[in-house]
Image (spheres, rainbow, N blue to C red):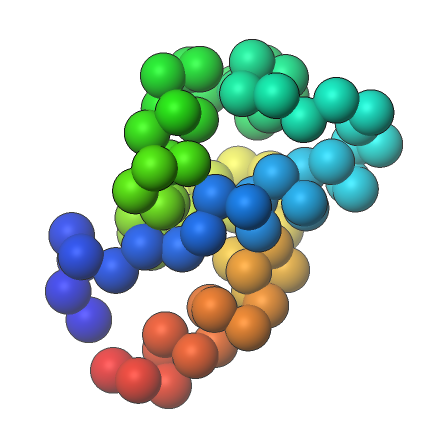
Length: 81
């Protein structure tokens, strides 16, 4: 797996965070504050995707497995090594 090229969709993170924390609004600032990241990072991830290794560390920080946040994408990525 190419560490820098493989990315997961930002939308998956937004859906999971909104459901997990019962968020009514899912703007960049709200998501960033909820997960302890910067708004600029959210903007970048929306454009480029979340790097797979960052996604793994972020999921652990949030008390989840990356497959909880990106169920199809995570397993598809690992099966395509």
